[in-house]
Image 1 (cartoon, rainbow, N blue to C red):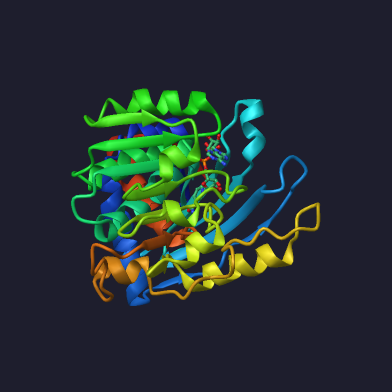
Image 2 (image 1 turned 90 degrees about the vertical axis):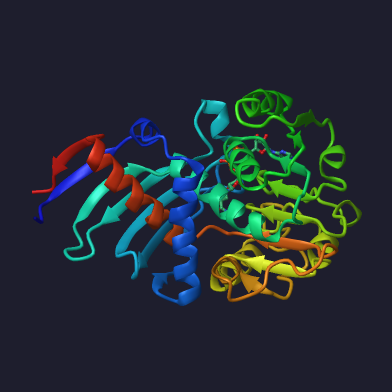
Length: 339
Ligand SMILES: NC(=O)c1ccc[n+]([C@@H]2O[C@H](COP(=O)([O-])OP(=O)(O)OC[C@H]3O[C@@H](n4cnc5c(N)ncnc54)[C@H](O)[C@@H]3O)[C@@H](O)[C@H]2O)c1
């Protein structure tokens, strides 16, 4: 039965569904496999950049269609790093989820919480295949919303972890995340007062900063390390990024587009802050190719591997599909009629 009913889901509604890491991983890995199979439609994010309050401000439009899943929609998402001063999240926005037969919007939902889950799930999906088996140390730099979700998902997929090191320029963020981690991680949690104490020699490195400082030095990224950075390649110095034996992105046109716009838009001092410092390294594979098994993942204990997921709309749509179905079953949210 088709209708013009639209389900509205607030962030609280979405959170109330209690999506587990496995729920989210299943949805996101399905989208990654469709990416490798080519059964999708997605375009490099177009956006606007109201940079009055911070040079990194953006609002992106992210439409996507997954043919095998039969799902489509659009995310309209902003990242405004100074929002903390107004007690607002850095990332805010809405996900529209459409009917593929009629085009009618079936749901409009908060996308901030879902973005955190899908981004951490993509990082976890590639980490479980590319981190050294039995890796014991995880370093997380940037302990905000994404850092918290990454810690939750990475500890979930890497059962050998014994020590987690946290670093943030805001010490209070580390303290909060360190105490939350005790709910699901029984190993040692170390709060680090410098980036070097956190990152040097860690077997798995996850960066979730605002991307305005290149913190990872070449000699800190040891042989056998795996790194995943969600702020483009911006958390890496050029030598650290370019020494990777395997360099992986989520989507090649997306990576090339972001590198191009970062070069086309110097900051207010006339300096360019490249999305990939020193240029995009030779790309070994996409995350979808690794997850679907069409490209080999780690092949030796010595390989340094870096993955940079820029953020794919197809993963958002796959997760929105799960949320729409679950919310419908549980009677969560409010409905309004477009007519
Ligand atoms: N690739 C993707 O798919 C994707 C998705 C969502 C967000 N992001 C990006 O992830 C980043 C984090 O988003 P968030 O929602 O967690 O923001 P947030 O503001 O909640 O967290 C960012 C944290 O990084 C810390 N930080 C800033 N600079 C730092 C530095 N040099 N060293 C250590 N810590 C530092 C901040 O103090 C803050 O705690 C943003 O850059 C955002 O644009 C990427």
